View 1 (cartoon, rainbow, N blue to C red):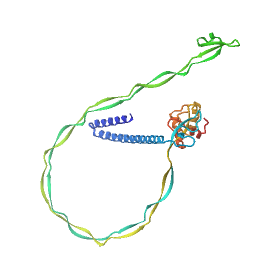
View 2 (cartoon, one colour):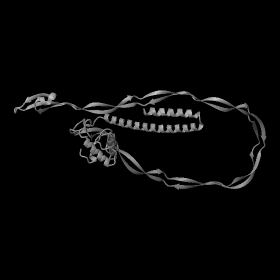
View 3 (cartoon, rainbow, N blue to C red):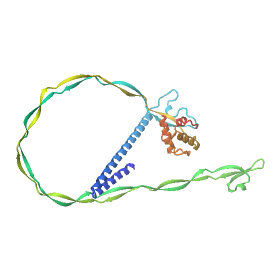
View 4 (cartoon, rainbow, N blue to C red):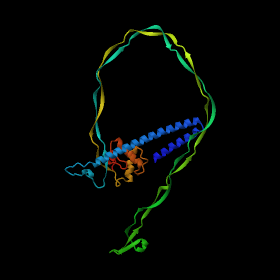
Length: 376
């Protein structure tokens, strides 16, 4: 959808540029410049989108390749990679990609071997005068210019065309009642007449007390959500052809030629005569070295199990504590509201990146909780 909008905007800009060209040449040049600028912007955005898509495809391919590899057998469990190790009740885990590790060191290498430089001592000359022919005798064809007249002609500047315009979708807000707390029953003291229609059954205890089984009705709450009122669609717009009346010169009488003889020309010029020929001198150049940085992979990428925050311990109070800790360290969580929203997840991922902790797009690693000194 994003690329379709960009392409439609490009066609609209080109159509507007063509229409303005028929009215004013200066406006046409300005519109053309704007179109070129828009084209550069679209190319940059498309290049960035393609780069992100390639990076995501490479990451998915690497994860798929690691998942296809058979788990390494151990003395304890031959399928240890299929489940989190030493898992405890109430804990949640996510399988994350741990990237390759590299080792970097410096090394002194030979950049350029020893060689010789040949220095040329130029030849020495002295000045002298000579009479030389600078231009031979020639013949010239003289052109008798043609005569012209001005005529008017109507030209097609832009042919009629059609343009697809996208009409965006519209939305509306609706409310809906959802179950907040289901109905349940409870024993209460007193006769059935005291509880009315809510009394399901009653019994008498050994002390003579009347116990009634009372039904507590379900509780509901109203929520508001946004739904599509009218989906996005496209419509076709007719763009009429543009014409321009121009004046042009046409030949009334064709040009003619005649031959004219031009005599040779001579001149006295200064020339250089060789007094001493050029010679060469050899100079030794020592070898050159440079310190370079080399990188070596010391560990392959792997899939590891990582403990993450569960629904059990992601209570509003715990989420508020997490948001407060991140905000104190300068991360934008979108407000301390106890909701694990997109801004809070983004702040968690930024913190994980800075502290070299593997992370995902939709969960909170427990290593982040520990790094923030939180007790959750």
